[in-house]
Image 1 (cartoon, one colour):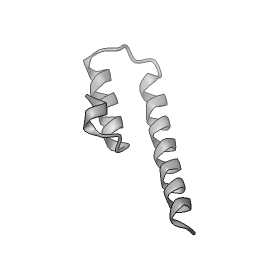
Image 2 (tube, rainbow, N blue to C red):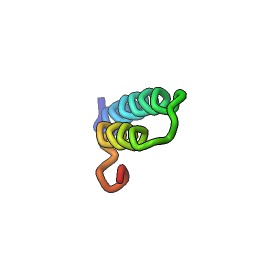
Image 3 (cartoon, helix red, strand yellow):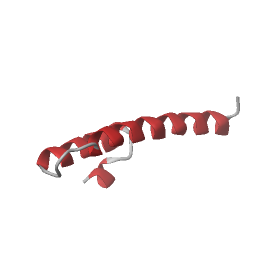
Length: 54
């Protein structure tokens, strides 16, 4: 497996995990402080970075 194939596979896993978590987050929650805390945690766990999550 080439470097780019490994990178693509890794990014696909990250994308799938992030979308699954976001689907769960947006599923019926009111947008309150807790929502933003959960969203920040999902973005950081997905390795998007702290600057995007703020």
